[in-house]
Image (cartoon, rainbow, N blue to C red; front, side):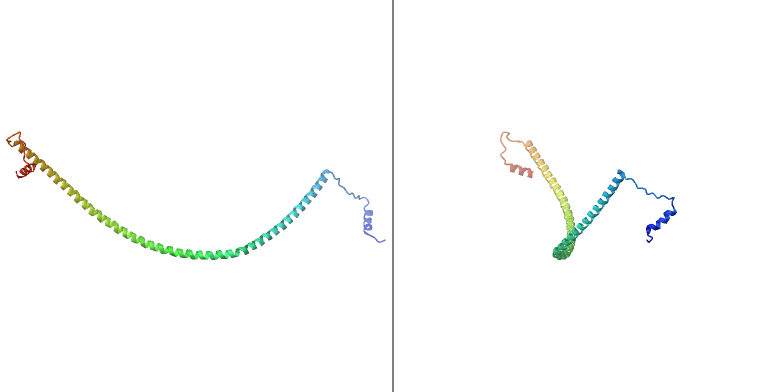
Length: 197
């Protein structure tokens, strides 16, 4: 026979007869069994979570593909609308430029009108001041005329009263031929006599 692997160990055992090889076999109690089972459960849960994660990523990938396809369809559908919107925006810009131009013209015209109004207002104010001065002079003249008229009326009234008093005095002082006879002279004749005398 040929020397094999077992024969190679035999000389060592013969050389070391006093060495005892002992193998310790651990005893398994309930804690060891439950720990092993829990490790197995955790391993299975980890595998399940990993599988679920892979399935979730695959579903997300399909969702992204669907969304991308929908976005492409939407882009194709909206491309004409975007072109129309671009044309509308260009027209709106042209209109805004026209409106700005018109507004600047109107603003310039309003400025010119404002200047003319300001000049007209100043001229009107000057004329009003002149008319006010004329009215002040007219008012002074009217006041003076009214005072002069009032004084003249007062003079006439006082003169008339003086004439009446004088006439009354003449009548009282004049000897009458008959006290019972009424005075038949017309009143105008009395007035004429008072003026003459």
